Amino acid sequence: RQCLDRRIDNRDLLKSEVDAWERRRTESGAQIRWMFSTDQARKKMAKSYPIPLLNES
Image: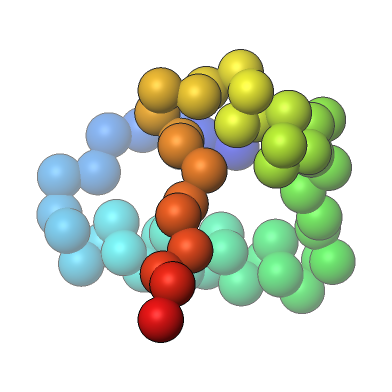
């Protein structure tokens, strides 16, 4: 829904477009509504996201 409708072949133009998009999203108060918790994600993606080990000192 939020992608561009054209190809941008210039890196500087792409960066300015993304910055403008990000600024509008931030100013509008847009939020991410996660559908799962961190624990649920770790269960589902256990191989990709292992539980970090605490360094014992």
